[in-house]
Image: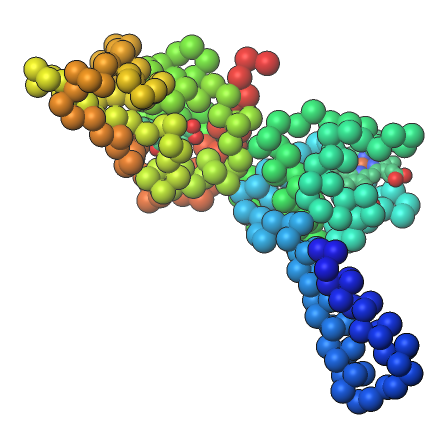
Length: 280
Ligand code: HEC
Ligand code: HEC
């Protein structure tokens, strides 16, 4: 980043020294200036996400209403000299700066530090960057209680997932999923489990030398062995040297809920998942 600044200064100095100001030299100078400022604006743009997901913005709006609006006001302009939705934040030009302001507060002012978990931070940043254009009326507000009822009942999620000590272990434990994953990631998982499967959640298929087939969820793996929970919930440690076949499956056994949920039901379910923040 230091280079464009240097090249911008150098030709101008050369011009001055020689005392000649030909057309070409001025044009070159102007071109360098334009390029340098373009470069600077690219640098600034990269400090912010290219796009913020609607599910994160919606979640952030709820957090803002509960945690920030008492001081900053509904429109983010209640504190003199601070316009949260205005874009040009003195202390938070980049998303990283904004996260730091939230984590540390601003010393010597009323702005307090917050202890947000990763999904909340993602959401509040997404919301602040979109405050001006976000339309609360157009967004389906999720009802976590309705979401929970569906999760435990008709949705059938508990036939695979475990929450707070209840349920099987064949699929990832969701007890603190609402702290770990963003609203957007949760929604994408429900729409397209295959497209959003994390490497650590891939299942494995193993066939032992004597022909026994094991399908399970990988808990741990090193060069020589792999620990899995099989589909009967047995914890197994397999010696790779004794396997005839060992495949990491990149598709998910979780069904897609894309066509099974209305927008409201999806919002309810995501709202419920976001309440799962472990036993804290
Ligand atoms: C108790 C009151 C209070 C609460 C609650 C509060 N703030 Fe602040 N905030 C302030 C004050 C006062 C300032 C201005 C500090 C200063 O003088 O620079 C500020 C400044 C900021 C700034 C820096 C603005 C800039 O121009 O750089 C950001 C960003 C911010 N707040 C975000 C938030 C968010 C997001 C929340 C909710 C999670 C929040 N604040 C909650 C009082 C509060
Ligand atoms: C047939 C078993 C099955 C059912 C039913 C099922 N899931 Fe899953 N789910 C899985 C498996 C296996 C994974 C891990 C692989 C993946 O991410 O797709 C997973 C992954 C997830 C993840 C991502 C976990 C992470 O670590 O990021 C979430 C969130 C989730 N499921 C929620 C749900 C919800 C909500 C329902 C009910 C609407 C549901 N699942 C129904 C098997 C299932």
